Amino acid sequence: MKNVKLIIEYDGTNYHGWQSQSNAKTVQETVEKAIYGLTGEVININGSSRTDQGVHAYGQVANFFTKSNIPHDRFSYALNRMLPEDIIIRKSEEVSMDFHARYCAKGKKYRYLIYNSSFPSAIFRNRSYHVSHNLDMDSMKKAIPFFKGTHDFSAFKATGSSVKTSVRTIFDVNLSRAEDNIWFEVSGDGFLYNMVRIMVGTLVDVGMGRIKAEEIPGIIESCDRKRAGRTAPPQGLYLVEVYYE
Image (tube, rainbow, N blue to C red; front, side, top):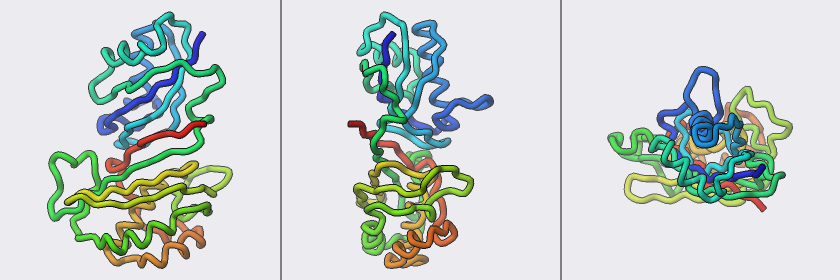
């Protein structure tokens, strides 16, 4: 028996998120079926993040236990021959038996793409959030430092989320623009449900003048979801990296 860790890249457009569901196609289910086809084993893979429908990943991490004699570093090659082209195993390696992709994670990095143009993009329609209003980048850049540090992010948590604490630490946050593409990148020790998408929606409201950059600390301190901005759509969100010790 060995524990195999996978680094998975996928385009989430055609999937109802990562986590297996009884009546919808998911990334987890698709990878598990490929492993079954390869090894004959019915296994359950552990994912580091339960990405939503339409969300993408450069570096989703998963692990599974197998009795297969296939060398750990060859799983990526073998599985990629069986998986659809919108899911790729970037790397496979053997890890300690106590490694768990979700519970051993120490942090994550996400990236979000806003396509800021008068007209939507045909190419990026499933990979970005189209905003036609001209966004004020200077105001948005003034707002992002307020997210850094340890805070109670209840104002940036989707309703119905059940967690023991809403306190999270943001390590770093950046905003950059290249022509019509605005990239928001954030890393932290963990994220609440829809937290990144609500942060982006709030920044868009700042860029449109609906919220002032200086209001962000007050919104965080209020713990009031109604004071933060909209929830940005899922297709602009990318899980970039998961951190481990």
